[in-house]
Length: 109
Image (cartoon, rainbow, N blue to C red):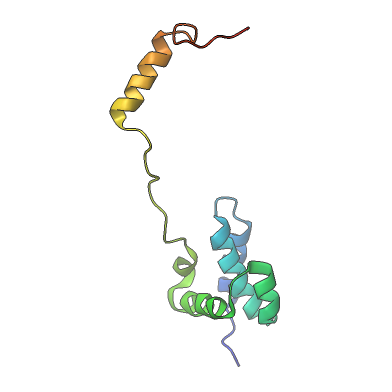
């Protein structure tokens, strides 16, 4: 028989699922672990989460080894900046000093 989760682990996973700050992939991973713990058929888990059978068992194994850190999205970080600091400063100064009409925008308002 598979290793059952402890009550503490179940509570942690349930908190992750209802936490409004978590990202969708993290929530789906937590759902996978809980559903497997409740012995839901793998085909049903696949339909709900869209994870493959292999991925489903990999998520569970990683969770049992690394706890909730296994559910975190590894691709977090600072988003790529589209403008340089100089470009941002230039835009802020233009917006603060000139009207849309001076920049060639015509408005009926």
